Image 1 (cartoon, rainbow, N blue to C red):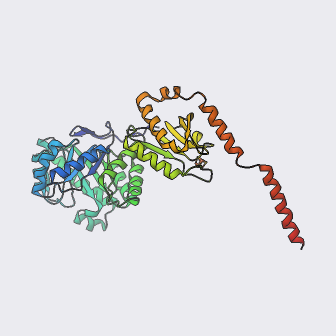
Image 2: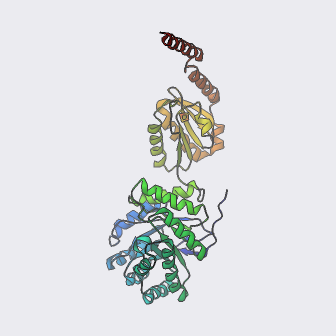
Image 3: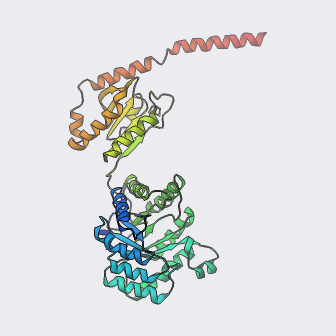
Length: 406
Ligand code: SF4
């Protein structure tokens, strides 16, 4: 089912379209010192290679603004400068050639200064994100509402919005991030009712893995499923590469972006498993990820249920007794030795990428299905004779009843 996105205004940050007619984009932020242009660029390249469409860097000092000159020149993706407290650094970032600005209304509060930045940005076609944050909310609003409530966050955004619109500035996106998931969701819902601008989603200060990932996924997915959200960021306390990967994968899993990375599915394993499913799944994931294979690949613990349960996967392997059944879209195409399960999977994945699913189905070994069925039958037969169990059960009952008579 295709999600109905909330209709928004649109614009571009560098070459990336923002708004309801464009794909939802993934953002992340560097952790390097922006003044160190080389280190920052190296991280931007890594973040971009892992799925980010736009990267934000802090512009917290004059040297950072100087670093931005080289960074914006050589970056593979648009760069947004993050500005807190000093509006003059926003002006310097514009001069340095950034593609976008993020202003925090909680700590740049003077109307005249915000308007000066907006006029400068307008002259250079640079969009601005109004980045409200529950943790750094405007002091007056905190007093008025007593807490960083959804109403307080939205009021902060609307106040800043008026300043920008006053000077004819409309290339705006807005975020109202909160570290509490229900508050975050409520803030965005409220904002979405009041404005037509694109929204940037995130759970702020979500923290390290796995909690940060769960909080971000919960908040961002809830809103995306309601059609709200045009750009996203996972704010995780870990390498920003993980933020980019997580954002990208979330959009792919929700089918909001085309798959361009691996989706490894695996059974959770159970007493039927004939191999260490966790180990095989991890080895397969590492091998396939290294080559950035954009397929859905399944690792299943047993041949009895595996291929059927993972029928939708492009490719998969299921463990038999000392064997692996390699299957494409649920059809067994080859039976391999257990030790070759991961290498065969990798090899077949490469061939599917090169030749396509149909060609590889056509290249299935002639008797693969037959061998696989024999393997399944042998496995089922080796699982014992049910008559013997019934006999044993009977004798247990006899023994128990004799004891009762004693
Ligand atoms: S595929 Fe087999 S081993 Fe894995 S959970 Fe299902 S029944 Fe258990």
